[in-house]
Each structure stands twice: as C-alpha cells, then as structure tokens.
Length: 132
Image (cartoon, rainbow, N blue to C red; front, side, top):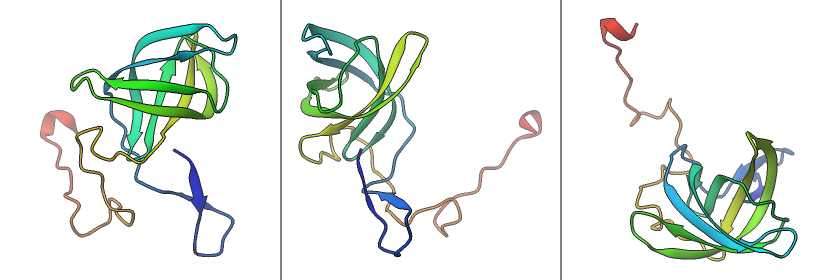
C-alpha cells in the first residue's frame, strides 16, 4: 500500500495499483507494540494488489510483520505495517503491504491504472425513480 512518485514531474504521488473499497473478512496475527502476540478477525476497508487497509484492536508499530488470512479462501499472506492511521471506535486504522505483490489474493480483478469513471468502458449508473 505504499506509493511511488508520479512520473509527470509533479510532487503528487501515485499508487502502484488501484485501491478498491471492499469489505473482505480477514484474520490477522502478529505482535503488538508491546511484543504480545495477537490474533484478530476483522474486515478490510480497502484492498489493492499490494495489500489492504484494515481496522484492528491491537496497537502495532510501523514495519511490524504479520500474517493475514483471507477468511473465505483460508489463504495466508505475510505482510507488514506501512501506514498507521487514526483510531476509530477503539480500533486503529492500519495499512498492510504484502511481502510480495499478490493481486490474486483477493479474488477480484483490479481496474487498470489509467481507469476512471470517465473511461469509455465505465458504465453509467442509472437510478430508478425510488432511488432519485
């Protein structure tokens, strides 16, 4: 979930893969900031080919290694903490990056880097009368 410099020469940064806002059940285990082992079930807030953004009760430090298990497939992947965000409702928002890119871990097709809602392949959303 790290970012790489944008090649356009501006100071803006660009993600290596598109982020998809998607809840996927996961189990994470590792050591908290005090060195105590934890094992916790949670859901992703967002995913990409390189990791995920999740909420956890455990307090972890940047760079901490952990194992993330996809609840549906039981597949496990080693990852490390690359982002420490705010605490919401007692849970810390953390960004995890896989040790190696694993776009198939999530079992979803990620949009190409240049995709946007204005892309010709994007389908417009039509609302029914009850949704307007």
